[in-house]
Image 1 (cartoon, one colour):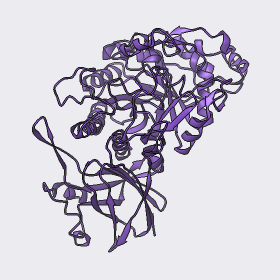
Image 2 (image 1 turned 45 degrees about the vertical axis):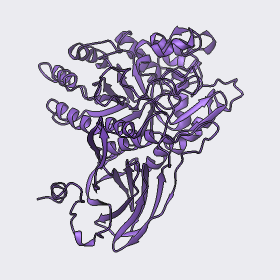
Image 3 (image 1 turned 180 degrees about the vertical axis):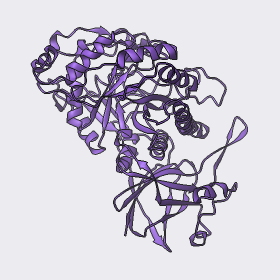
Image 4 (image 1 turned 90 degrees about the horizontal axis):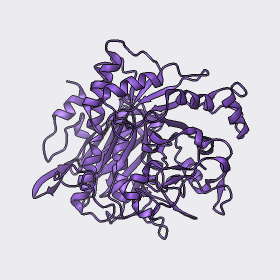
Length: 551
C-alpha cells in the first residue's frame, strides 16, 4: 500500500492519522501535517491567482476608473492606489469586460476618441438590485469611457495579462474576428491596426486569452449545450492569430452541472471531431451563496447577510465554498471521457461568497458587499483547492476585484482600503509558479448544530508548494473557538529555518472600513522547531502561511 493510501485509510474519528515514522510525533498535538517533498503534483500556474473586472456597479466606475482629469491620484485615468496594491500581490491575469455585461457589449463602442464614444444601456439595468439607482449613473448607462484601450493599459500598469470575454450572445462571429484583429494585428498591417495606432497604441496588444461567450447556459444566450457547441465551433474556428498561441476558453457549467459538460463535449468530440488546438480551457463558475440550511434553492431567498451572521452561517458558507473540490474532480472526469489527453483544463473564472444586498458602501455599487474574516477563509480554502489540483486547474479569477461580491479592495471617490481578501492573496502569492507538493492534514473535525442536527466540517486543510529550497505551506483553521496545536513534518529534507504569517481576528464579523482600514490584517506567527518537527499554534478562525527553508 502506498504511503498516502495508508495515511487516508488510517483515519479514525476523533483521533489523528498514524503517519509514517509515527514515533517522531509528540502525543499532545491537536493536529499533524506531513509535507511529502518526494510527491510533487505539478506546477501551480500563476494564472490561478487571477482577478475579474466587470462593468457592474462600482467595479469599473468608482473602482478601477476615476478619469484622467480626476483629482484622485491616477495613471491615465486608472486609480493609482489600486495599481500599486495589485503589484504587491503579483496579479497575473485580469478577466474583462464580464460576466454578463460581456453578453451585451460591443467592443467597438469602447475604442476611438473617448468624447465620441456612444452611450449604451448597461446589461445590469434590468436587475432588481439596480432599482435603487433611479435610472442614473454609469452603472446603468454605460459611457464607454473605459474600453479595450484603457483595459489593456490597466493590464500593462499592473503587470497582468488580459483575458477578454467575447460576446457570443448578441454579436456575430465576424465581430469577434475583428476584435482579435484590433488587439493583435501588427502595426500598420490593417485598418483596425491603424485605428488602434490613432488612439496611441501602434504596437499590438498580444492578447492571448479569449473567452468564447460567458455563462451561455444563462445570461449568455440561454443555449442548450448542443446549441452552444455549434456556436462555439463557429466562433472559434479560423480566428486570425498573427503568430500568437491563442488560448480559447469555452463557457462551461454553472456550479457542478455535469449534464452541460457531458453534452457539450459529446457534441464537440463525437461524430465530426473538433480538433482546434487553441481550445485549452473550460470555464466553471461557482459561488457560495445558499445559507438556508437546505430549506430552499431560490437564488434570492437562500442568500445570507455579509455582516449579520451566526456561527452556523460561518460553517455553512465555508461548506458551500468547499464544494469546489468535488466540482473540479467531477468536471475533470466528465471531460476526460472525450478529451482523453486532457488538453482542455479547467478555468474557474468566477468564484467566491455572494450575499444579499444591503452592505454595499455606496448605493451605486450594485452587488457590493462587505468582506469579513469569513470571506478571507472562504477565499483561502478555494485557493488551496486550486493548488492541490495543479494538473486540472490552469486559470482562475476571483469575482470580483473591487467594490463587488468577493472584492479585494473597496473604494468610493477618494477613499480606498484593502479587504481581508487582499491579505490572503498577499500571503498566497508565493505559491505562484511553485511545484505543488502532496500534504496530508490530520485534525479532528469541527462539530456544530445544523437545524438541530449534528453537522461537521474539517478541522484543518491547506496546500504546499516548493520553489528551490523554500517550501510554502498555507493552512486554514475554520474552528471559531479553538487554537490548534499543530506539528509539521517535512519528509525528504531537513529544515534550516521557518517563519510564519497569520490572518486572524477575535470577532468572526471583523472587517476593514474606510475609517478602520487595518482592522483585519496579517501579522507574524511564532514557530518552534525540535525533534525534526515544526510546532505552531494555529489560531482559531485563521489563515496561516509558513515559509520553510530547507537545508
